Image (tube, rainbow, N blue to C red; front, side, top):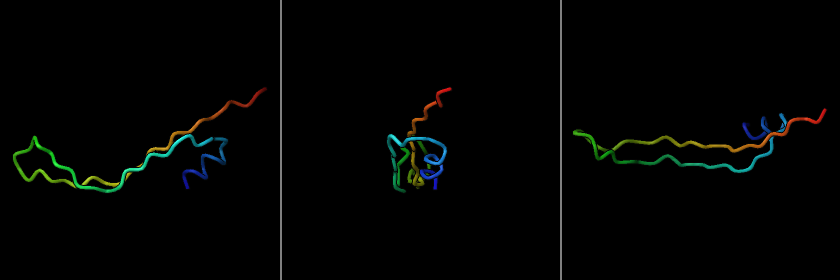
Length: 52
């Protein structure tokens, strides 16, 4: 949906970075160091200003 929205608004997708859900360990805690990191993404877009 976000990629379509960007294209509809004149954006060009340069890159999409996706990180799957995963477990991480926080070594600076005194309690259980395991934590779950949610999946996420970054969309890098390029927009041009319309010429007058």
